[in-house]
Image (tube, rainbow, N blue to C red; front, side):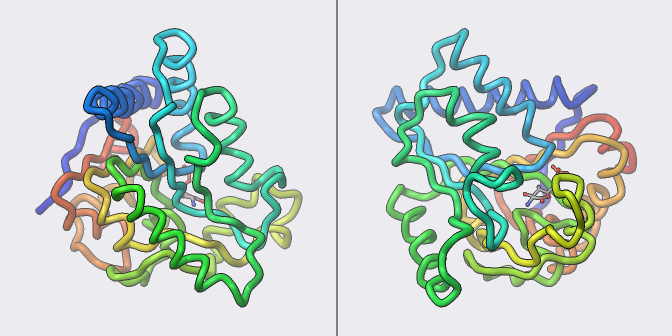
Length: 249
Ligand code: GLP
């Protein structure tokens, strides 16, 4: 198995393509009277995808009434209304602008008491299954190859769980915080196996700084040392890239 690669001139073009894929799936499932279950990502990479989906809602009548979402990850601990929380990111960038039902939104809760996290993570997995599984999972990629917050070494059989962030990840994400010491050391993330169970996966990456890791993920061995390379084992995974992120392929 290997991943498919689609290359666009820039982030805008690539994001428009991805948003169109998502919209097509939402409409196709709606026509059949089915919910569309989306796995969603945060970070800088999907921002234009969400902006385009909002535009399609406002201008083309794309409805999220029958959409169920599960986000990949969240810092731990973090309050949902903290500036850096993925909860806030999703509501600000997508959910508050569309007609999704709040009860259909699932984002890992960064406030669960530590002794309840195990049960909480198991429940998150069960909710995905109850919804019928993820139809389309959107992913970004970290410089170390992480997907969600599955850092290098994450087991291919891993499920939703609490994970310690790599120092490199904390540094990469520190621009959102006043000081590196404020970047949480932990996160709740879907596991690799949770992600691989999605029926279809789209990973997006833009910019020269992602070129080296994209090369490893696409052309290197499929290894737990490069979590994104494990996507090679999925039967329907596409990497949507701009020319810069694809420049080392
Ligand atoms: C994060 C997220 C990932 C994301 C990655 C890349 O912190 N947990 O889901 O894909 O880092 O982020 P960016 O898109 O900003 O490069």
